Image (cartoon, rainbow, N blue to C red; front, side, top):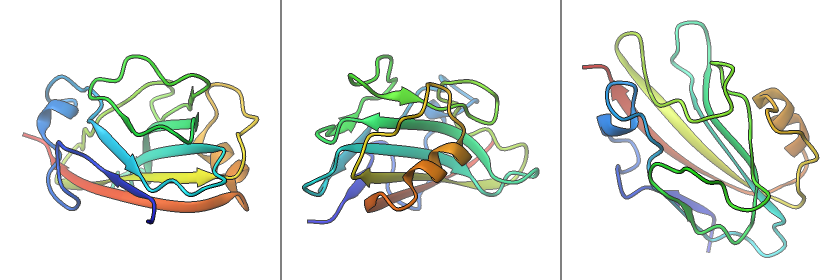
Length: 150
């Protein structure tokens, strides 16, 4: 079984419901994780928008998720034990939902199964996370959704 990342709120390649965006409640969507490979010590999740006018915009960064994490709840308020939040492009260690200034944008949720925990402090940037996972990725999964502002 390969690593998978799905959501009960939207299917891959389809529109992310407004509830999870700046146009509504701006809460995290429910995510389901399956197929974590044996030997994984942690998971990392990065959600970003490569269509942002100023370049890729980082919306949500999580790392050191336990490898037995089966999913992340809608409107996630408490992280699993040991998990940390990275700093998004707004400079916050929090979820920042889709909020494109114009047009339709793609939002990529990328999940990484790692052979180690990351020795990064809370608030690490995407650049720091990607550098730390280099050479330690056992498997990767991706879920892409789109959003267009009302």
